[in-house]
Length: 144
Image 1 (cartoon, helix red, strand yellow):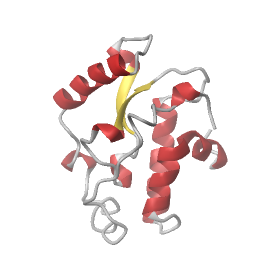
Image 2: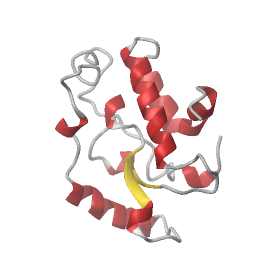
Image 3: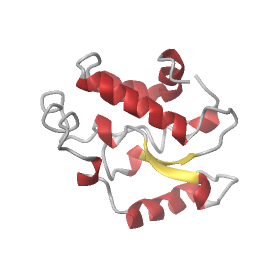
């Protein structure tokens, strides 16, 4: 497990799956090359407003919006809920460790998506792994 500043507050952002994406339909949804996260991504006005609200709620010392990505803890490409605030959080680009920010989590998202679509990892396991400790996956999968 990495340092606390690379994870969201689990009480506010536990990770929420999209009920429309199921293990039975991944080949028709997230694993279909014609499917796109754009089809479910919430508008920027919504995520920007939520980012401001959550930075305040989390009492983050750095309040500069540009230092955060309003990120889906369970990413859209793994069937994360697009608009539920319990799946969104202001993820910092820079953290207390060099490889603990938003760009590194993006690598985990892509890796797990590929694993789910290859049939190597079940959808629910991938969702759980990224929500519980994305950094452990980052290290153990050798994504550094």
